[in-house]
Image (tube, rainbow, N blue to C red; front, side, top):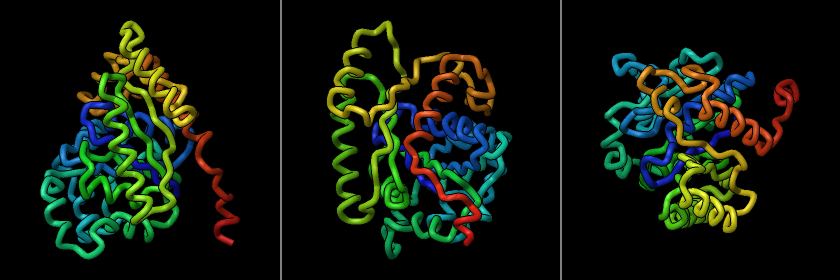
Length: 263
């Protein structure tokens, strides 16, 4: 089971859109995918049509130890895609977690007991670098960073990379950067092109070739409780996430066959 945290401390860069649509694209390949909604806003859960009344168990319950993973996920309407939803209880979780032993390892301990039901876990992190995001990074094998093509993009990215280095040093030396995905890409905008060139010059092959365009259908889909890939699979945004999923799969370490793992 590979665990990927989707993180950027800046809000509005496409983390949740990426989690939903990348998860859907991976599930369409036959992978069994689990989304963990770790953002108190719960937009990943809502964007997949999970009503708040149906969220009996949530990522909050996992973090404070009141529920096991196998009791907390909900099957979505997308085949092979499950989600552990978020509730407003997460809003106070960072304060509560301060009182817990090994407060940065709560999610990691959950995954250590998870078995191999899923091939990939995607964690939709909140727009901050607090304890929730730290738990995701400690539990994750790798990090996917959605990066909006705007003036302060590199400045925000440097802060995130500094945090990643601290996590590696203190808690999770195996944490890698799987890739940076440029989002809200507008080819008509000269600034977009300039930021893209700058990011690629600094980070090189860490940046995915695929860019996620600004796209109306991509923005509309969550209001219908659907991934864009189901809402309109032919729109440019859906096609971009399918291409991104192919790139991501190519970067993932190849798993051993399941019968070999059992042996």
